[in-house]
Length: 306
Ligand SMILES: Nc1ncnc2c1ncn2[C@@H]1O[C@H](COP(=O)(O)OP(=O)(O)O)[C@@H](O)[C@H]1O
Ligand SMILES: [Mg+2]
Image (cartoon, rainbow, N blue to C red; front, top):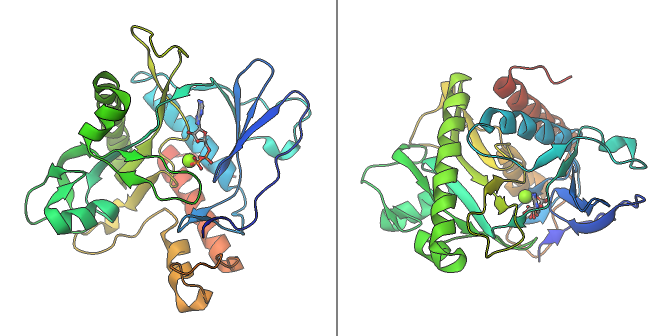
């Protein structure tokens, strides 16, 4: 089993139609046909949406995405139209709402990796490849790759694993031209973001983007690829403090690694491999998590959170 421990109810707002409850974001459509994306304080781990919220998380991720969209604006158009809270919506939506162009999403998780870890490391140790791409001998957990690589995955439903796929498989699924555009955009945006993060003392080990097309017509001659969803947040990326980076071991990180660590420890009384839903997080894990999200925001943007 997996999915939501407690499935949240959509909020009723006049003029908005509820479309989808994602792991973290709730999606609505407004009367203009635009997408209203509301980032909740939910967290997912081990394919479960946890029963405990991290206060302000959705706001922090939304503000960090907005900051990144600005940094990337000359490289690629993004889906943001405004941050206006729709009339009649809860006051709590302020800071966590993005009104976006509703895109024809490309169903590929576009991952860029500049460093070896996670599922990439597992594959490398078996076959010296990542997503079928050959890599040199001698790399360890946390090693910087000779050059960043595009390692796409197929997008799973809530409660399922994303699965790494080869570039050829992506090309089969979405067409050679779209696949080439995805790879080019993913590596260009990763390269820019890695350099910005590096200047701020943070290693951007890997990250995941989602793209869409503005035109609803798949037969459009030159459709423009648009970057969508969230970008370059601790939920979609591995950020490591550069000062502590040392290949050959697990890295300290700004993501939810220590939520995962607590859940898999004795203290939680829970086995991630079991069929049972995960328990509530203790207050100290909630507080420490929130502090990590704030720290990532402040270090990257150079702005203070509160
Ligand atoms: N501009 C857009 N147009 C249409 N769908 C979008 C757009 N931006 C993001 N999405 C989709 O909205 C959802 C965001 O909610 P999230 O909680 O992250 O979902 P998930 O559980 O799929 O990760 C994702 O399914 C993403 O593909
Ligand atoms: Mg998502």
